Length: 252
Image 1 (cartoon, one colour):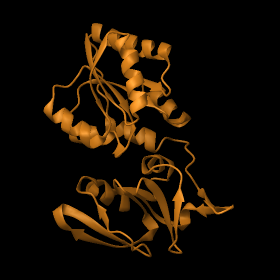
Image 2 (cartoon, helix red, strand yellow; image 1 turned 45 degrees about the vertical axis):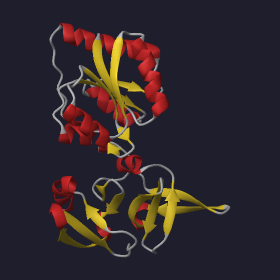
Image 3 (cartoon, one colour; image 1 turned 90 degrees about the vertical axis):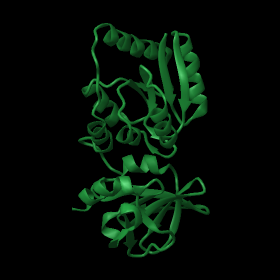
C-alpha cells in the first residue's frame, strides 16, 4: 500500500481527499494543515512516497516547507490557482489537481505516479523555480486597485496608494498613504500572488510592504531587519530571519 500525507488547511477538503484515496488503496499517514506543523512533522517522521500538497496554507505558501526540509517524496499539488498557474504547471509537467478534486482526474494523477515508480523515474522539483512560475508567470496582469465597501458606498483604492497590507484577528487590511485602514477580501497568501512582486514583498507571515513606502531599514535582533514606512506606525515591521536574504535582493 502506498504511503502518503495530505497537507491542506481546509479540513473538509482534506477529509474528502482522504476518503477518495482510500478507494485507491492509498494510506494517508497524516493530515497536516500549516507550514509550521508540516516542517515539524517532516523533521520527526519518515517521509512518505507521495504528498498531496495545497499551495496556499493558513500561515504561508507551502514552498516554505521545502526551504526548510529536504523533501524527496513525489508531490501532487491540489490547487485553486488561476489559468496562468495552471499553464505553468502544464508546461513544466507538474502534476496538479484542480479543486474541487474530480474522481477521474485523481485516478489519472495516481496512474501517472504509479507509472513513474514502475519505470524508476524520480521526479525532483525545483521549488524555487516553481515559486517563481506561480508568483511571477509571464503575461500575468497584477492587481491595480481594490474595491472596499464603506457603509452603502464602494471605494476604489489604487495599489500605488497602499503602504502595506497586514492581517489581524483573521482579517486582512490595507493601510494607505493617508493613514487609513481598509478591510479587504482575501488573505495575505492570495495577495502575495496578485501583487506586482517588484513593488510588494511579504516580510513575515502577517505583513506585506510596498517598496516605495520604505523610509528606513535598520538591523534588528536575531539577524532580522526592522522597517519604517512613511506613515504606518500601528505595528512593528520586522523582516523574518528566513526572509532577510530575499528581502535584500528585492530592494536592490
